[in-house]
Image (tube, rainbow, N blue to C red; front, side, top):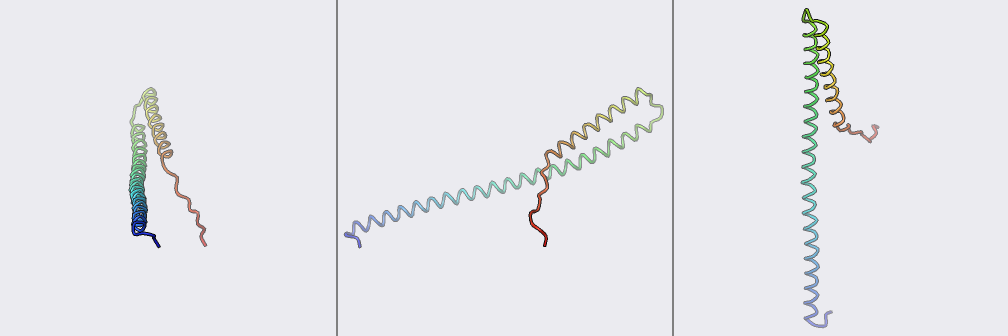
Length: 122
C-alpha cells in the first residue's frame, strides 16, 4: 500500500509512461510489418513482370527461328545464285544463327530455375 497519495500518483504516471512506451514500440513494429508486406508485394509483382518478359522473349526467339529458317529456304530456292553470292548468303544466315544462339543463351542465363518440390508423394 502506498505511504501517500503522492506516491500512488507517481506509480500511475510511471505505469502510463511504461504503457505509452510499449504502445509506441508496438506501433513501430506494426509500421515495419506493413512496410515489409508492401515490399513483398512489390517484389512479387516485379518477379511476375520478369517472368512475363521471359515468356514473351521465348516466343520472340521462336518466331525469329521460324523467320530465319523460312528466309533461308526461300533464298536457297532462288535460281542462278553465284558461289560468291551463296557465300554471302551463308555468312548472313550463320550470323543470324549465332545471334539467335546468343539470345537463347542470354535468356537461359536470366531465367530462374524451376522450383524443386521437397515433399514426398505417399
